[in-house]
Length: 269
Image (cartoon, rainbow, N blue to C red; front, side, top):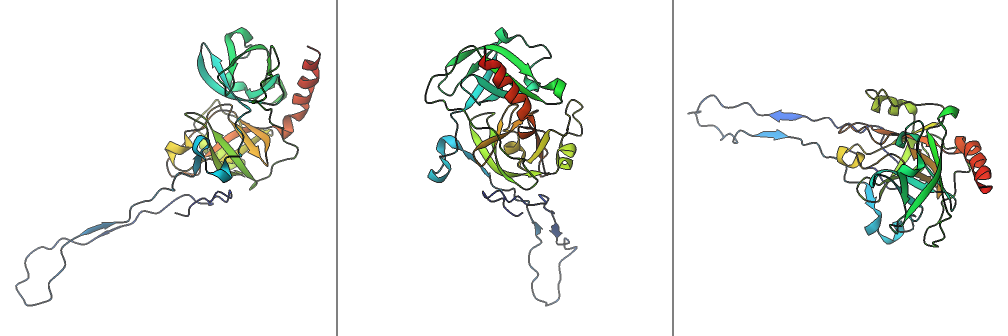
């Protein structure tokens, strides 16, 4: 199997053919003087998975340590982490609508920053009526800790084969160097998930073909392109071992009107 490089070039086909070579078992001893036959063996070409091509940011090499984490927020409900979020201003956090019911009650949730400080939520805006699976969470107060830095939002449209960094925060903060793929990949990945939708505002991003790596993404995980927040993971992963797996993200560039409208509205609160 061709290994995926950190440059983001992902192999088009993640499938490896497994071939077994079987030497027929001898039916009896050969009494004639011939060359001795080699012992019967059964050789199998074992399928080799791609090595883990995600990087743990907490132990990242120097050249990867610049990948930011100081904008990440954990969404808690009843003190349980249910989703991730991304700080885009000192009071606004982007996450997925799949993290909330249709009419969320802000007091039931809190946001926790990377310093483990919890923040009260004032209001939750859902973009569902606009065809956007994007939730914008307004904090009751600004985050003044200089160690927390808002991430800039996407300034250009992503295209198929663009290189991106897929954050994977289900267990700890990791990321995967990967690329944008056609929506057909995600349609196949979520074929059995009736609650998942791919719309004009969706981005499909190739996840790992190793199931235990693929399953490390979660709802609300960010997608970065050239240091900008360009996507929010909507549903989390749907993984099949050895398959070309895809995760569905909200296209932040196509949601900018909604984001900017909420920014202006909250400036007055």
